[in-house]
Length: 185
Ligand SMILES: Nc1nc2c(ncn2[C@@H]2O[C@H](COP(=O)(O)OP(=O)(O)OP(=O)(O)O)[C@@H](O)[C@H]2O)c(=O)[nH]1
Image (cartoon, rainbow, N blue to C red; front, side, top):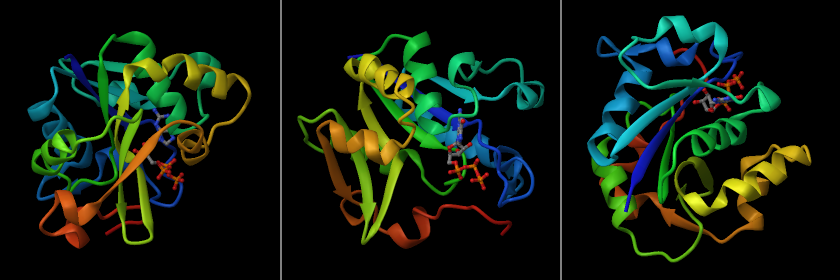
């Protein structure tokens, strides 16, 4: 079973004020922390970003810019871009703005038994749709959704079989781990 990591790093970071992928924690770029988590559990990892940010990343990493038909259309477009460029049975998706997630949580999410199309994390009333595992068979459906201008990840998830895994089932410290950084720390 081939597993590919998709690291979403193509957002505008309007609330943060500068590209979140290059924010730092413990002297490490956010994107690097998420990349390391994915790299430990996936066969390959691909960073999906936008053109302006491309030159900022090291050249040795696998990088793609969003499919030009859907550039600026949000994370679903990023996920499609990854799936459309690299074949895999499953894709482990992470955003670049949840830097405290480690390979431990991802491993436990991967091991969680589910027969659905998507497994994603829910923490109390908070949904984390971008901390998720997607079946490679969803590519065409995502394409149709984007073509119909339905860009919402949550909306897409409601149209397929999505299993929400409680954060405390895959983490011993979910409140610290599943922090979504939208504003400067
Ligand atoms: N590849 C790609 N990633 C995206 C896109 N939009 C958002 N993301 C990523 O998805 C994750 C969640 O993004 P958000 O925080 O919702 O949006 P943002 O644009 O980064 O931030 P705001 O401008 O403050 O809303 C982050 O990792 C973003 O980098 C996009 O159009 N393409």
